Image (cartoon, rainbow, N blue to C red; front, side, top):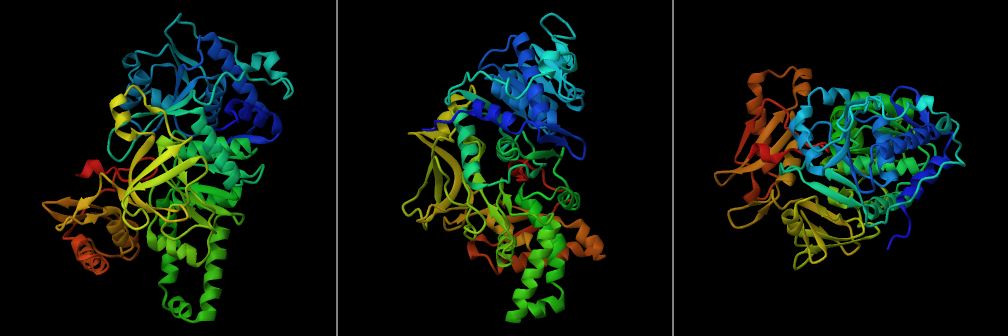
Amino acid sequence: MISEKLIPIIQDSLKTYWDKPAFTDYPGPALSYGDVAKQIVWLHRLFKTCGVKKGDKIALAGKNCSNWAIVWMAAVSYGAVIVPILANFSADEMQHIVNHSEAVIFFVSKDKNDTIDDDAITACKYILCLDNFSILQNRVDGRKELIKPLHELDDINRMSKESLSFEDVCDNEDMGAIIYTSGTTGFSKGVMLPHRSLLANLLVATEKLLFKVGAKVIAFLPLAHAYACSFDLVYPFTRGNHINFMDRIPTPKVLLAAMQDLKPNIVLVVPLLVEKIYKKQLQPTLEQPKIKAMLKVPLLNKVIKNKIRDKLVAAFGGQITELVAGGAPMNAEVEQFMKLIRFPVTIGYGMTECGPLISYCRWFEHRYESSGKTIRFLTAKVNSPDPQKIPGEIMIKGDQVFLGYYKNPEATAEVLRDGWLYTGDIGTIDKDDFIYIRGRSKNVILGPGGENIYPELVEQKLNNLPYVGESLVLERNGAIYALVYPDIEALDTDKVPESKIAEIMESNRKEANTALASFSRIAKVEIVNEPFQKTPTQKIKRYLYR
């Protein structure tokens, strides 16, 4: 049972770090923790004027920015339920979520509001602009100003850290957030996360992630996703970190430039970003004949690996202590190389329904091909006769587990049974509670003899081969097909003519099949002309291609 409470932790962070920089819309000026506190108090006053009560829903849509974070903190510390909406959702999806969640207030960025049909939003009383907190629609009395702007309120502007006080109105079982997923299955459901789930993730991060107090953080993964919200916002906020918001996932080039400027010590990424950096920055060096020869000499091998590691650490700003990858599987070849050079990268596992963390460990404890160790407050088991060897569905129980899907008891009953969350992920757990993910149960393909074929593992083999940008493996007419989007940049760099691409991919198919069991070999490769559509954590939306 967790004894800590979330609202007092938010308040204590504001008081403790009052004069330190808190938020920057990178590369702009910084707001201090004191500045953020005054904005939160102003929003609390606005919520009260709007008649918002404990448990009322406040929807939030827009790209990463300081105001996004301030609204999140203000809503949760008021006792309301925050409903963050992914910025890449369509206008129809946003309208549906605002209505379905019964949000009283909707904060929306101007660019998103321009695409929305306000008349289609029927449940909401107030629509406010996320960019400047101005009123876009007041459906109660039509007024364009409900309270005076912050700069005109002397009592808030004169407020000191000693006078800051939030009323702790929430119990740990109370709902804190509803997060509408954008999963690979194509169905968006509202995940109800209680305060205990938000707290459990925060407490685990406090014990394990060890951000240096006051260190700079780069927040570029979508904050509306549980992964980024918990570990790029909520946790660093409680450490007095200076959080620098980027409004989209940057290219490796842009990211590395920001790293040089900000010099973070811990960075959250999705595996695809690490894989791109490996493929573009490291693989060409490793393929050089001279380097290949030197790597075969034991003494030189160590020297070369250390130089590559030092170069990579410098590329990430020079002060990197850990790169945490999550949200999708990492390519095995990339992971193995990072381990060989002892670069501090680790891989975690989670899902929105756990707010999100399920397993994680520090990079020097991490085991190859695992997704970390089951974390505190959780119990995990595998539905299998031999959980260490025979893959089965991973099941979870503990404080992180959600309350259910909002207004969807049927979907809730499918995954919450007998006190356990059935994750839909297939894997094994070793004797030390390290989790090894094999794939999603809905993605598993049955082989000709009833064998389980995990398309994610076949894709890893293909993605390591020349000129493969990304791939998607599926079943067609009883055979294994691979859709491949070529690495256009590499093809252009090497001046490979388009007429040769099919031949190269057929060669890749044969090469991949030499490393695959007979029942999981690829029958045919089809070349696609556009990148695959993805979720915010860069997992391919498989349902679109079946």
